[in-house]
Structure formats: structure tokens, C-alpha cells
Length: 172
Image 1 (cartoon, rainbow, N blue to C red):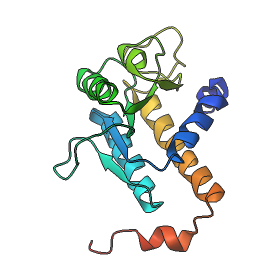
Image 2: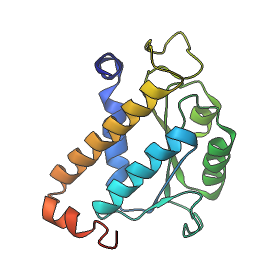
Image 3: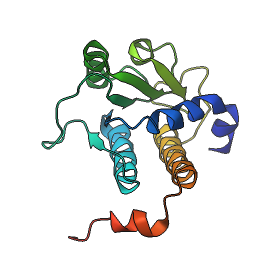
Image 4: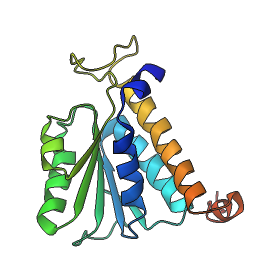
């Protein structure tokens, strides 16, 4: 993972943080393991007090102009994720994607792209090599990066552990 993070553009991570500070509703989408990472990110953002929804859940409201869509796909070619991003753009949402491929269909429908150059199932030339199967390295990097973004957000917004913990589920 260290090799992946060293190849990344810090400005892209800063752009994600800036978008999170925009005080708008956030919709996060991904499929498969990227979807699990998306839901983990959504959960932590909720703990931080943001208005966030996981696309595909039965309680997710309709998107509207000026909402933020964060679309996660290692390959950038997952049809359902591209469809949500394209619908969001059509409605007037800001679309921010997290992918390995800045030339992908997902990147092309996005306003901003955060590139994580980790290995995916496609094993493209620009991806960091990995012995792990499929997109494991990408998924792990997404999880660590999103947690780091949440930490940065909590520090810059002065959100305490106690406040965050007060939003943690108490009906487990």
C-alpha cells in the first residue's frame, strides 16, 4: 500500500476533503468489494455528522441538483456505478469518482477524479503490482484512504471522539 500512496496526487485527496466540506447531501456508490468500502466510508461520514446515503439502500432518497455523488470503482467500468454517476450529472449533482483509471468511462462522467493506482482485476500497466487476488489492493487502499480523509475532516472541523461516538449505533 505504501507504494500506491506514494504515487498518488495529494491534490486529489484535498479535492475530496473540500467537497465533503460543501455542506451538501452526499450519495456514495460502489459495487462488490468497492461497494463495501463505499458503505464503510458512508458510515464513518455519518458518524462525523454529514448527511450521507449509500446508493441502493431502501431508505436512500432521490438525488437532487447540487448533491455530491462519490462513485467508487477500481476499473472505472462498473456499469451500475457509471449509470448512477451519469444520472447524477444529468440531475445537476457534483460527481467525484475514486478509481484506478482516469481514462475510464466513470472518470469521463465525473467532475473530479481521485486516482488510486493500485492493482485491480484488470492488471493495467499503470497499476501498482500485487500478489493479492483481483482488486484486493485497491479495496484496501480505498478503505485506508477514506479513513484518513475522515480523520483529516474530523480534525479540521474540530469533531471530537465523544461527538463521533454519540452518533454510533446503540441498538446493536
